[in-house]
Length: 611
Ligand code: ADP
Ligand code: MG
Image (cartoon, rainbow, N blue to C red):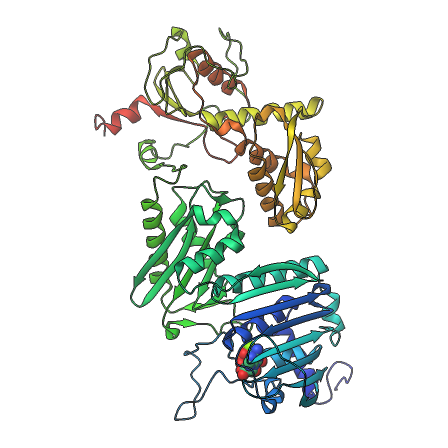
């Protein structure tokens, strides 16, 4: 027995406007996608200048104007038709080659999709003719008719979109805040502006200019200038040029020095044949290339451009065209890693944080952990200590400074050797303390260790009476992007409890009034940027107490603890003893070991005395 309530009575073809609205959802999922499609059209039209205006997160209005080739009046209606494009032409057999795509657009869907869910006016002019415009309202067309449009060049196009998604209330309901739509739009425009240095861009949001970049020369210098305008002015001084060619694949671009790293991977960009793409390939490549130079939680700033035969990459994976598939991903991966490593090696003298774990990794006995001697849980407490654990005096002048870079025998009480971290024998490179234990030697990374100790002391202070602050004589004014400043400022009260006193200082700037005294002098700019990066990664949600470790780690990283300090014997031994008495002292706040132990047997193995 047929149940008419459960089973549809007959199959019907949907009316065209419903089909269009359904399809529109795939291409235009949010205002940023509409902006991206329109700007891509302008790029395909050969524009030299693209001006974008946004109101109300793009939902009230978004308008893109270019000085590209334009369209004649009769084309305007067709441009708004689904599957109508000027970018794919059939070959002699009438076939379309989807693997041979040279333009950003090719699906002929964007304008139709936007028009299906908005009120759209398309105005255009080709060189030597008058302008015409056409209106579309929820898919219904009006026009074309003559229009008053001069634009910036001899020809050009303006697409003015109002009330996006008014025709699909369900979609409208799922839009995030205006602010987050604005962020997504800015991100999309930035990516395209990085891809096309020879085109000038402006982006205006609710009457405010968010981005204005002039057209640059079409060469590596022009590209670097454009990247610096978007990634930060200092990128120029901290970038290595990358260039390599293999098997018809050309790689170019710029990679940041390891020292110019960020707290998240959002500043890593890949462009394939001029198309900004989001591909996981990049993550693996960057990790592999930088692994010897960067801690796991630091991420380089990087923009790479791959140019290859259209036929060896499929861009038709997803309607938004941000994913690609390479025919030979392994070769491309190899090329990218090789070129980055080469570039980094050449720039070795410029990078200050080279981490050479290789030799020590080999010296470590098979399967032995890199870190703690005495576990994480219970701190080791020497039964009868000749030296009461005390704070290492990093800030005071040492009485007998060691010569930098030399090994000096130290006068250390003989029984100190029986402590787990042994007796300090020398300081090397103002960074490493070499200690002798009863059956081996210990190399302590004094900065990592000090970081850890400061962090544990801060935790103790916080538990007792709050963190002591050191007011700055002259408050630091730190300029960030507007979004980043907002991200940090939302935690003003929590940060104050941790000793960091900040307040808003106009648009995109933060005034730092005090820092936690434990950390000494701080790089406040770097610190605020790190915090903003961290907060951006999860976009709010977590309270600051849940992020205590993260914030502390950032502070320690940006404090004067980092700088080289010469220590005398007493200070070094005090540091070792404090490490022994402090929980979790086997690793720094970033999970790296604070010391490495080589047992006598390991050393003998190193020298081939043992198998
Ligand atoms: P696609 O870009 O995939 O071809 P669209 O729907 O985005 O599809 O655009 C349809 C057609 O309209 C394009 O192929 C192009 O011929 C024309 N067009 C769209 N935008 C512009 C523009 N800014 N300048 C000139 N022509 C344009
Ligand atoms: Mg298009």
